[in-house]
Image 1: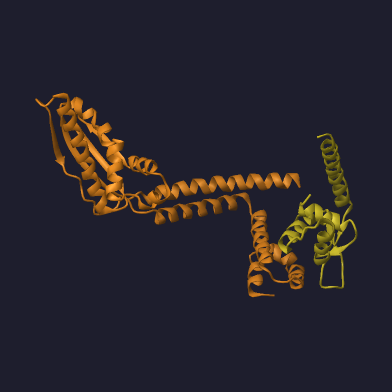
Image 2: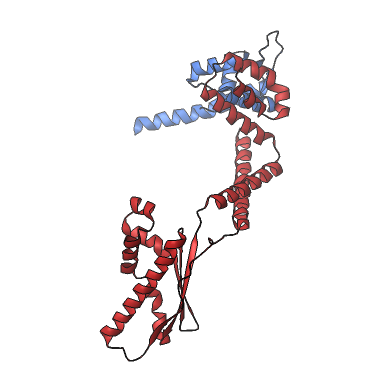
Length: 95
Length: 236
């Protein structure tokens, strides 16, 4: 749940963002403050995997966009997590 | 941007900086400089260096760091001095008993207390454990059936001689007492061939041994790290 790459993808699923906006957004929805080194480590890996891409901007800050491949990966990972959460919660009720 | 932050950014691989430095610096400008940010930058730089380096480079770095660590341990290790004493025991059957006489726990406890050996250990550990530690530094070897070599290692060159002398004295006392108790005083002798030596120089463990152990450990750790990184990459 705290995998930086997953958090970045989840943030970009809500729209294009630059680094600082991603940090703020992730802190808001996940309660996790990513450091700049951790964030750019995730951005580097995701760009290499073609799951996100930089987009043109007049701003000095570089915004990123999630790709179709990134969306597919995010959907698949969230489904897996959802199944785990559902199973865990059901079992907790019976415990 | 602080000088430390600029330095930490320079730790990232050149190829990575060519692509990301401008936007990365822009992001850092927007953040308040804290020690957490600095640690995160350091961690990020190390990770990026390792991720962009080839396996061969990581193995070479691990081997080099391991070798340096081995040499550092060798330099930091306390000096150990050794005193040796050679005895001739008759009859030869009595010589076989000398290992037990030298390692006698009662004698060792008395020596530890009288000579105040291992003061740092005495402050932390029960006396039995200090005696056990001393016991590990005593070596007894029998040669040619009736010759017994007693050897003791300790970090103090004066005490090591005194203690070896005490070990021999205690063992002789025990042996004489045993002979008196059993009425066996008609034959047999204990002759000191070489009195306990006074070491002038510490026992030197070869630096190459430490370097080699460090090299092996460093290479194995680097190999494990590569395996871990590959596993993480395949899961991502």
